[in-house]
Length: 362
Image (cartoon, rainbow, N blue to C red; front, side, top):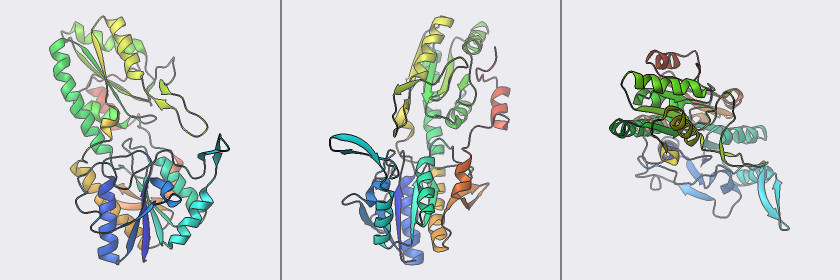
């Protein structure tokens, strides 16, 4: 193994730089291997200046930094790339150009650090003969085959701190505070942060809610002399009799953008409970900033393990945390069934035992 390429794709997450650092240090110091950084996801393979050398000097000091020194692109699918030709927008497949560029670089393997979208693209390239190794990244923690994706722990801690801060102002002003968090199809951030922060209501995509159940929960607290409540809402939560709330429409390439369910919940609760209600949308604060100790620890292990997989020529596979050990699993197997909150899990049962409502009663 003499040369590897590494890219970071999809939405950014705390810990990306920690993976890059670990991969570079392992490749250089253990295998005497050169690493090339690919800028802005897969786009870097076919764009001018998209390939840069990554050595020990380039990764020095980046362990605690958020974001990624390589940049990323969550709308960069080479198999369906939107371009303008003859004054019109068209969707074209440039995957063969990417494959050709990879061959010209004479790399022994490509390490793809990304979420389900980037890793699905990696699997497609593997089927076209590209030697790829995956590293699971997403704050949503919704990739199969691994107990935890990196970035999740940091996002949960940021959300929990927000809940702690909302508690004090909610109690002081006798308000209902609604906190909207990320989570399109999976409610792991809301569930973990909600339990950790002492939320009264948690609304997640896996459990469609009823308005009456939430209202009943809050009014019951009032009857018991507690005049404030904390409601945590995943952006992908929806009522039983309604659909998802979007702030931007999608098209044949780009998925629509969720946003607004928190405001809808707040508006409804203020009318139906008579209590002053405020909404906070945490948004990209969950993605930014320095990674937690757990994410730095996990990313360092993932980055080193990805290089070891490449050295063993175990391509088409992904590093994963199962229990306390970092192992590897097939990319295809990891992606075939997206991970969702298990409604029979002890986490959900614990929330119910603590008196937290999921809005699924009444």
